Length: 289
Image (cartoon, rainbow, N blue to C red; front, side, top):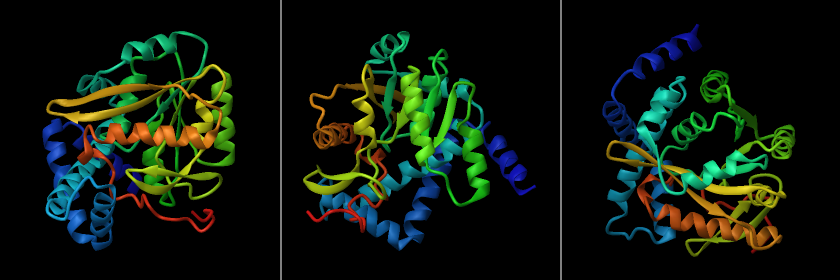
């Protein structure tokens, strides 16, 4: 009953215009930043560590970053996860290098989309999958411990040609099968390696312990890889795609290449990156620097 009620509320909210939804998201982001001292401290520390902000402007920048992340949450719950693929296509216009994406998707070879925490990647995926309907999008996700949110997330992400895949050993096997079948794989490239393999790489001049899964997938034979992200603009979103071709089979080098590209993408819209993530933590299993 509770799940049905929440779904009904979200469905009703989905009929509101995008500016109103984004306004609600901004308020939610500001409230979260002010109520959670831990989150506020982390955002501020991350921004200062990367050199994007100074002590003079970090507080105002953190506030704007919180607004953007609040927008992402509300947009995701009320648009991307409400079966509104047509609305996603309407508000998210295809931008840089989409012609290359279409060309890569016409063949039988697999395509990888690396979707960093920028803008609204959920809307970007829905808008892209609504155009490229002849391939299945296998999107890696991390299940939550909250059964209600998990049900909303799975229901919202699943489409005729979108297949959510959990971050488990079985899920990784599913993604490998999807690559072998010439399908599309979507994966976040900017997570800390909390389990499994990881390597230390430079990120804005600081060390982060990065997961290697995305890098290993880019080395799969015949694969075409793109960074894909939906930047928030005045009237909606622009979905840009940056091609990436590994120049070596050395996984550690590939991971560093991905993070170097990630830096340049973040600098396009730095306030739209997810700065409250514990980016610089050192997992217990990580080797010494």
